[in-house]
Length: 310
Ligand code: DAU
Image 1 (cartoon, rainbow, N blue to C red):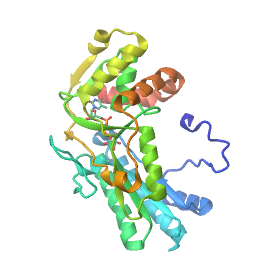
Image 2: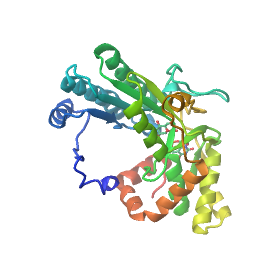
Image 3: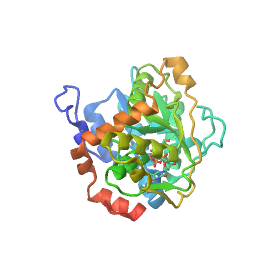
Image 4: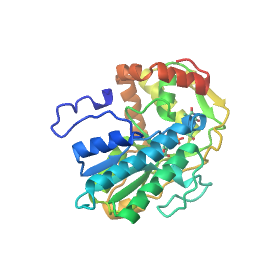
């Protein structure tokens, strides 16, 4: 809830806590609120969690998306004027790239993990609702987000917090996997452009133009944390710990975002350097947020995944 602070008094804001796998609750909520636009972010998102427990991913990402689509179809009832159902998805649906090439909107789906398979399935449901019922859908497939408020199960915030706490920095395999890093504000701008001006029934890829090997991401985090806190760089480098690789670990993701650039004029504004510094500063300045998310659940996760107490 801390992430929503400051919105409470807006006249066009309401918060409803419900489980999207509960079809009745979703239907009632939609009947009450009668939304014109639905921008669907709700998902289980962490690949490692999907490897240890895939069921929640099928339930939330596939059944949950189905429930939202079905309720939208019911309340709109064929009147799609100025309506939008926008599904937030991932580049992981395309599988893994080798050393060359990019994901395009036309790349065949080839997901590797239970997480990405569940997102692929939900994308297909969204497309089917457009083709079959005419529900005005849009899909965006983004690369790896980073920035303030990122839950510290993901690589960048995990490395920042473990540096600050002088805990081991677990790098899977040899750290040679490549991800394309997209600053969260750039992602939000892109979503806005697609939701407001993107074509109905279309998919848009969103990338950060920042392809980096994991081990270089870790070195970059160490450098910025060292500069911002004065902790000697060697001390932080000594925390790097190469651990067993993720099963089915995709080697490389890279996004061709020329469609959104050419059609809607969007491109990322943040460089990885500037975005990472803002991110590290945010974690240093928001210790109470950090403390609150490092709850019992988080500690359990760290124990299960890394055998590491927090
Ligand atoms: O590409 C978009 C996707 O990016 C999103 O759809 C997912 O929801 C999001 O979780 C993210 O998936 P990744 O698996 O790429 O993100 P993650 O931060 O878990 O890992 C990034 C890379 O770092 C990946 O190659 C695995 C590696 N890694 C990750 C963790 C958590 C490590 O080496 N050590 C770690 O402890």
